[in-house]
Length: 96
Image (tube, rainbow, N blue to C red; front, side):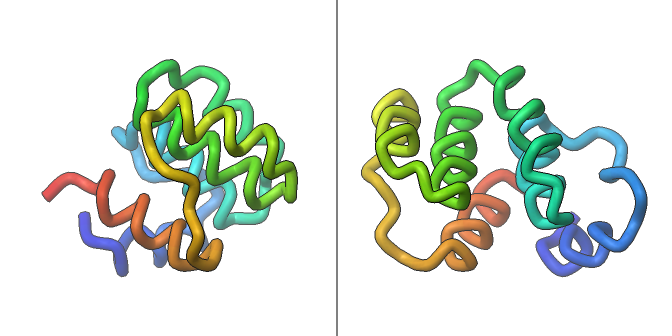
């Protein structure tokens, strides 16, 4: 799946089958359901999941909590726009 297909899938009621928890998190956030996105993020205990979790708290405006999750992911805090971070995370996580 490429990023354009992933973006187009957001018009559907549910995320495509087989997505990782991190991609499900990004999918639900893009759909406008932060709560459901956060539920997915809380289930994902991986470093990648922590990076996406950081992004979610940045969306929320809770930069202190985002910093905790960036640290846990071993990533520097993002400095670009939320749109840029979403696109970068999605591109990184989509299967090649």
